[in-house]
Image 1 (cartoon, rainbow, N blue to C red):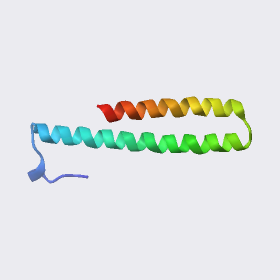
Image 2 (cartoon, helix red, strand yellow):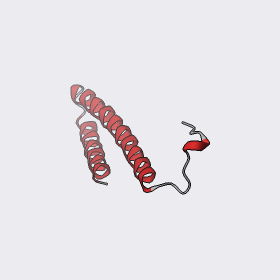
Image 3 (cartoon, rainbow, N blue to C red):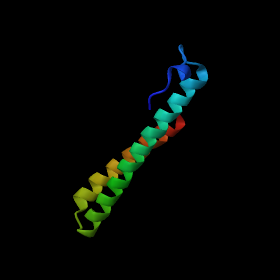
Image 4 (cartoon, one colour):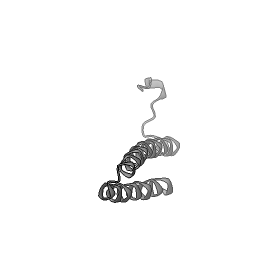
Length: 75
């Protein structure tokens, strides 16, 4: 979104910096959540076909994504 010149603060206020940081974290969490849902769907498919090696790999990837989301939420 392009802001009109009248809405642009320079240097940005602490509130604008905090807002931008929050928006960036929310976008990162959404991206990570989407990736997690994709991995879960793949893992379910692997479980159905009894591909246990792929299930283990996807479970590890899922745990990594969850840890990443927890770290993003704490910031």
